[in-house]
Length: 139
Image (cartoon, one colour):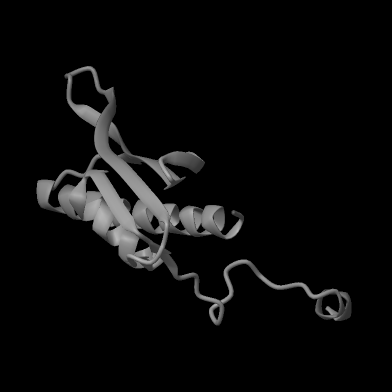
């Protein structure tokens, strides 16, 4: 512990050092609900005095991954794909693609399945937001 304090170690996700990034323009494509949650989680702001532009493109899919002998779905996979790019004077400075996915078994009750899928989507968005924060901090 003494060595970590002495060498200036600082955790990347420290609470008191919240990342606030401002961009001249934030362009979103794809799933609006996911884009809004990511923007809020990462604290992205628009500021006309900035000369950087951020483009965020997201896609959310639920795939059927296996079926039983009767043709009924047994397992699913929820996938969020995200492309993030930062431009300055129409030149891409940094760009990254993120893929977050989770596989799960079906639920007998459709309401419970939908509720579970929404919970999974929110968890994937939170994981994705943390990955984006890490990517932006390492710029």
